[in-house]
Length: 124
Image 1 (cartoon, rainbow, N blue to C red):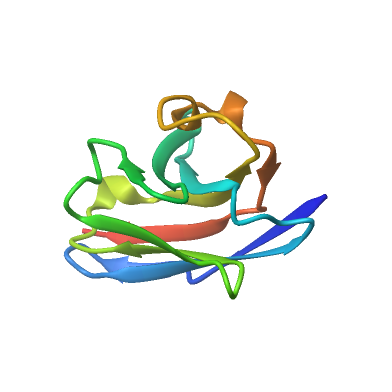
Image 2: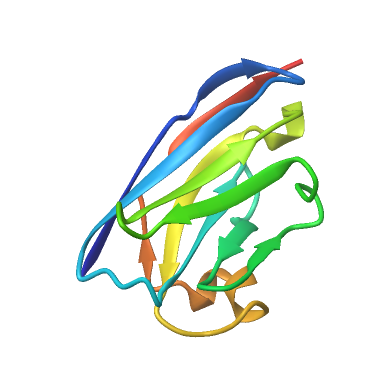
């Protein structure tokens, strides 16, 4: 089993920045793809970003504003969010996938492990 714990959420004004962290423990592997999804009230969970051993992937809505990175030595993945907008308000979930590829990771069905989420609120 893999446990994922997010941190770094909070309240920020539009145009501001936040950094989310996700610490992984348990039977982790640097071969797992790691990523972030988000879910706003009344909406479905949606893909935000993912990182594999070699590549990064982003939703079009965050491309150019968000950056995902990972520190395999610390079993931690980060999401730096810049130029935040009110529509970025959501609960952000850390995710890990044992297999798949850059296309499949965009679907929640490809995810094997989830964190409990951290709330990001962007005020106008």
